[in-house]
Image 1 (tube, helix red, strand yellow):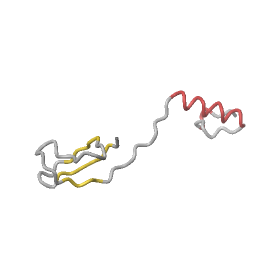
Image 2 (cartoon, rainbow, N blue to C red):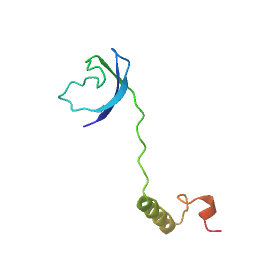
Image 3 (cartoon, rainbow, N blue to C red):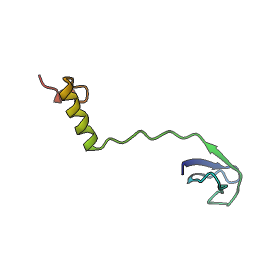
Image 4 (spheres, rainbow, N blue to C red):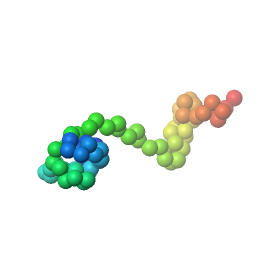
Amino acid sequence: MPLYDYQCRDCAQTFELLVRSSTSPACPKCGGPHLEKLLSCPAPPGQSAGQVKRARNQAAREGHFSNYKPSERPR
């Protein structure tokens, strides 16, 4: 189920809802059905410590250090 941003045309409330394709969303403040779907920015994928470690290990194996900060690169 995707998460969408909406703005109610009746009360101007902005909110986000988790919506199934088979349901008609309503405003949580006034209950109005007149909603406008807003454009929202996609969230960038998070980087966990494990992902960073794997990327750095692979970079070291391949002989480049693009995943390292300049201060962490070997001299």
